[in-house]
Length: 380
Image 1 (tube, rainbow, N blue to C red):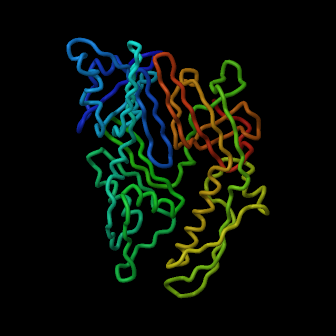
Image 2: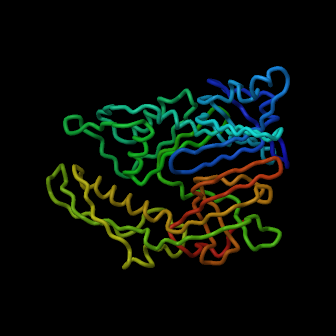
Image 3: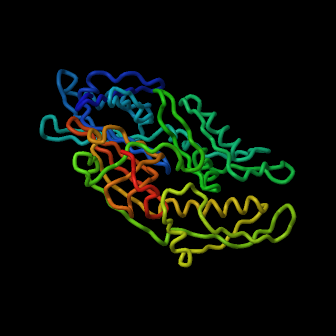
C-alpha cells in the first residue's frame, strides 16, 4: 500500500513470511501498530472483503486465504522518507469478520502480537542451577532463534550468582512471564523491538533507556513548526515511593536496615516530584527475605526507581508527515512550546501507528519523573 509518500510492505506466511499476494494488498484498508515497553506490542490490520467469480458463490476469497489464518507470521515494513523500517514482526492470533449487506462494506480484521507471544505459549517448571538473572535471560532469549531474536541484555547493578548448595533459581511459568518477573526485581523492562532488518528482532532486557540522543522534537504552538495535533498532561504527585525496613542477611544472619532516599534514574527534569514533595512521599516497608544485604538494597532501590518513572504522563497525537519522521518508543524525545513546566525531555513509553490511504497518525505516551525543563532550549 502506497500513499502520501509512505509505502507499506506486507510479508506473511506460516514459517518464512513472503510478500503478500496482490489481492491481499489491494484489499488492505488500514493498519494499526502499537509498541510499548510493558507487555507485548500488537497490530491490527483491516481488509475490505468482496465476492466475485465462481468461487465467490461459496465464500469470500480473502476469508478463505490460508495466509491470513491464525498463527501465521506477519511482517510490516514502512518506507518513510525513502528509508525502509520494520514496523512490526508478529504472529496472527485473532480474526474478526464483519459481513455487510452493502457491496464492498464487509470487513476482515486481523489482530496479532509481536513474536514474544511464542514465549508465552507454554508454562514450564525449570531449574536454572548456578545461573544468575543475566545468564538466564540470555539463555531464554537465545532459545527462540527461529524468530530472529537478538539478545540485548543489560547486567543488573547487583548480581548474586546462586551457589547450588545454597539455592537454585526455579522457573514456574512461561518464559515471557519469567523474564518479566526477573526484570521487575531490578526495575527493568523486557520487550521485543522489530528489526533492524526484516526477519530479525531485538529482545531487550534492561532498564528503561533514558539516555541517548533525543529524537526530533515534538512542537506545539510554534506556527509552521507545529507537528503535535493534541496533547494532555497528568501529574501524579503520589506516585513516588520510598522503601524502608530490615533484612536478615542470609550470609551473616545479621539484621541490616534497608532504606531508599532518591531515584537513581538519569534525570530528565529540574524539579523531580520525589525531591519537591519529599516529606509527603509514600513510604512502604521492605518485606523481602532470603536475601543478602546487596540484593535487598538493589530490590528496594528498583522499587523506588520504578515508582518515579511515570509521575508525569503526557498523551497526544501527531501527524507523521508534519513531524517528518516516525516517533520511536522506548527512547527520548524533546517537547517544546507548552511552557517551562512541561517542556523538556521525555521517555517515550508507547507509540500507536495508524495508517490509512489518506493519513498517517501517531498516538504517543510520554513519561518522566517531574516538571521543569533541564535545558532552556529544546533542539528541533
